[in-house]
Image 1 (tube, helix red, strand yellow):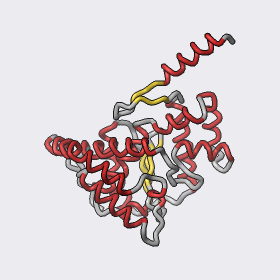
Image 2 (cartoon, one colour):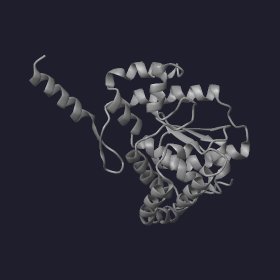
Image 3 (tube, one colour):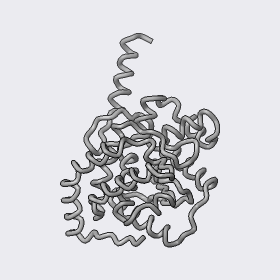
Length: 261
């Protein structure tokens, strides 16, 4: 194939793959979203089959109340599952799936603190961070094989697929997103929770609690793959004025979540 033709084809692929995140950042994401959704659905199905699901009605109602208020702002039919796991963890997957560990649900003091984590994780999905990582590392030609690989999570390809999707070797453990992705998810998440009527100031309190928990005997896997507590808290404080206004607007519109822990 002639170099000029190759260059032209590459430019077409590049231009077609250019997208913009909710924060206005340009990104390269050329994996078909329906393939990412299929991977998310498969991974979530595997987790439900292999991980214990909480049967605590009160805890499930609390988590779903918070998640439903936030997902109402983004639309779609989201499935929410509480997994019986003491680690401080939550995640959202392409395909509109949300998982929350009982360890995190037990740690938070109120609905607003849980909303800050769920908003952050949904932020990763809205910004198509999994798509961006796969586009950068693998290329579109591997998409179909990756979907199949998720069904065999113990294989090397399966582990690669899960890690790029946002899941680790043990389901539910978040694998590292880049610092850029984490900061972007924080910015999206704090505004999203505020638009739903939650108090964005509690996001700072939540991360202070997470920082304290990481210094104790209980391992805080959620923190182990995220930016430093101080950096995250400082960045959230910068977003707080705008997010507070969004919360006030939400309250004026009658959005006042009442999710009782």
